[in-house]
Length: 184
Image (cartoon, rainbow, N blue to C red; front, side, top):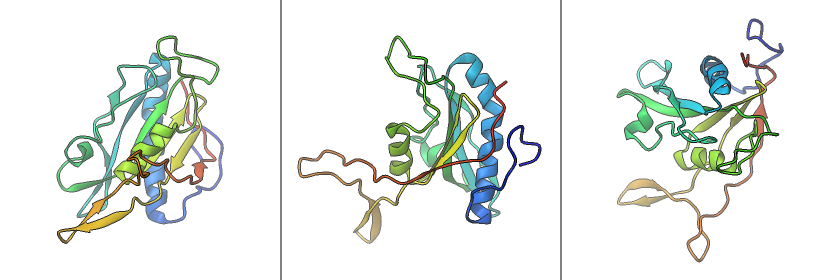
């Protein structure tokens, strides 16, 4: 998109609502990616939608304290979103290049979603965004989690095998956007 600091082209969203969320995620990621790269620590937060007006906002940005991870607040009340809003997505950065390996954890940098990133989105039932060290931005739309009715209320159930092990998240395509975020 013009003025975004990168390639131009059409947004790959399918609806106006998703397009606005993509653009909000892009702006929020652009605001934190350079500092994340400079520090080497992931940054992220939750995107919240106003229940009365549909306006998009963000919870407070958090910085990971350990390489290759950041707690964006999904375990908090309303996923860290203020009252009167609903969490709709989370976003975070992957600031290290693939050729770098963290000596403490042995983890390699990647601009793509990790399996943990995908499971977090799947478990929370919200969209995930990630910005890589090279300025690439991706979106992951998790498949819906099955629900069962318990005392008249829907309860999300994470599928498990016969021995109670959580099954892998069903594979769905990841969207890579045709714009590039600034890295400095």
